[in-house]
Structure formats: C-alpha cells, structure tokens
Length: 282
Image (cartoon, rainbow, N blue to C red; front, side, top):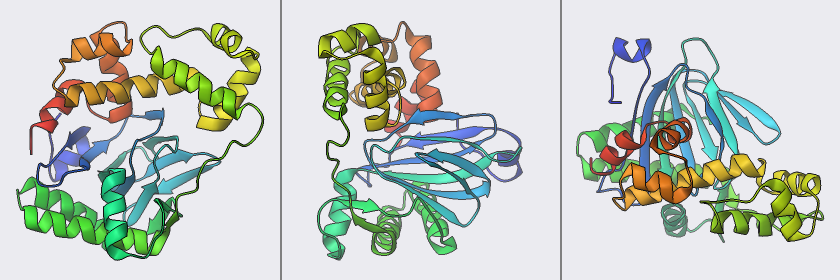
C-alpha cells in the first residue's frame, strides 16, 4: 500500500510503514484505516501517535480511549493494546515508533528523568505536539534530515518532560507469575512447534487454567495471542535482516506465507512485502 493525499485519503484505506535512514532507531507509520482492526499486541519500543482525522479507539488494560485530532497517544513498551476505528469514516494518524535506545538517549540529554523513562499518560490533548509529529513525517518524506531529526527530538523531549517518569519495574506479583515467565520462555524457544496449553502446564507442574490465568495477568493476553504477536515480531526482525517472507513464515512457525501475511498485516498495519520495501525506502 502506498501513501495518499487530500480527498483521496478520506475514501480508502492506505498505509506506509517505513524507516528513514537518517533517523536511526525509529519506525514511521502514516495511515488511514476504516475497516482495519489491530488485534491485541505489544511493541518492543514506544508508540507516539498523532491522530490527524476521524477517531481512533484504543483498548488498553482496564481502559478504552477515543483519540481525535489534536490528541497524542502514548504507549510504553510491552503494553498490550488494540486499535480500531471509532467512527464510520475511520481514522488517520501519523505514528512514531521510537526504540528504547532513542527514548533513553533523549531522556539523558534533557536530564530530567532517572532510570528507564515511561509515559505516565496514555493520551494527551496537545495540538502543537500533534502537528509536530505530522511534520516529522513530512520532513522525512521530503528527505530533509535536519528538520526531521530536529522535530523528532523536540517532540520526544516535550512528551518526556511533560508526561513521563521512571518506567515501573515489573515485580513478581501474585502466585503464578514465575510460571507465566517460564511459559513465555518455553514459547519463545519453541516458537516453531509450541506445546499445547495442557502440555505446557504439565511441563511447568501446574494446571492449564492456573497457567492461563497467570499468563493473562502477567502479559495482558492469553498464551496463543501472545505467541502470534511474538511470531510477528520475530518475523519483522527476520525481514529486517533480508530474509524472504516465505522463509520467515516457516522459521517463526506459521503454516505458510499467506498465514504470515494475514497476521502480519493485522498487527503491523501493512503486508510483509510493503514492510520490506519500507525498510529500503530511507
């Protein structure tokens, strides 16, 4: 899928997910979605998204947000969430996906945060920041590295200064958290041929229901949903390394390339082929 402009953007779905070589540690997504629904998933890094049209409905643990123009959505690493259109005409947005390293670098430069920074608000009304995020995209698309980098660091610093604190350190909470973490490690290690829930529970010395409850408490989604998300994340890394989609699909445990295409498109927002082209775009 490519980009669209003007009235064309209001009539159809389109998306561009790419990297600009002059902005390392950052993915960019600009899109207009109408029917597309993002299933529950999480990111390795951060999300800073400016809604530029329509309404985006974001499902977060314990809350549902409705973000419209002038708002900025802020999501920390590993926070499970969903996204869908909140109105019939869908939503348009410009999204920045900064890596942990980039966020930490900017936080160190401004010197106001200790430890790993985390956003303390999931959505803020900030038309100025929203415009700046869209301008990062425009500058990158125009090949203006100086403007893009300046605007990027400015908007990240603004969000960190106004809406961030130390990222909470996860501690083993209720009973079963250790089993959930062990289950995750097994699924990561055996992604190509994962055990059933019953087999996994037996290996860990617990019951299927107890493990399911503990896993959902720890990671915000059941094991099978988490595994699909993890497979897509690993497939992204393989595609980044130049591995063909069919090989990536087999490596991460999808039955075939169409299976990868379906889940990848739902979670990332563009098909694997468009994603690969976007990696070479900068």
